[in-house]
Image (cartoon, rainbow, N blue to C red; front, side):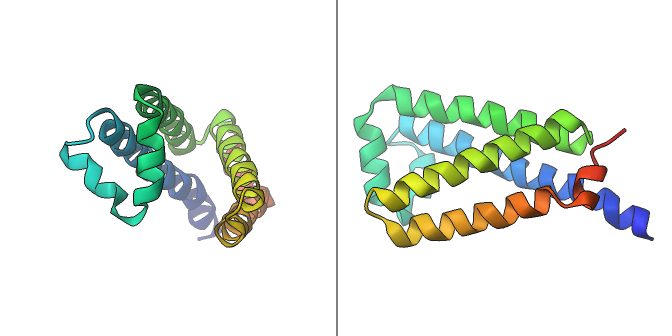
Length: 136
C-alpha cells in the first residue's frame, strides 16, 4: 500500500506541470493574438495583461518557451526521472524568487503568499519519500 502511495508523487507533479504547460501556452497565444479567444484567461489580471502586451511579441514568445520548460518538467516527472525532479525544484525556486521580487516591488501581500506557497512546495519536494520516488 505504501509503495502505491509513494508512486503517486511523480504523477501529482506531472499533472501540475501539464496544467502549467497549457496555461503558459494559452498566455503566450493570448499575447501573440490579443483579439483571439485565449485573451479571456486574463480577466482576473487585466493590468498584468496590458503590461505584458506593451512588451510586444517577446512576451508571448517567452511564455511559449516557458511552456516548453513546463512540458519537459512534466514529462520528467511522469517518467520518474531525477532530472524531472531537479527541473521541478528549479522552476519552483525561480518562482519563489520572482514572488520575492514582487513583494519588494510593491505587491507585498501577493508576493508573500506566492513565496509561502513556493516554500511549502519546495519543502514537500525535498521530503525523503518524494525524492525517493524519482530514484531508479
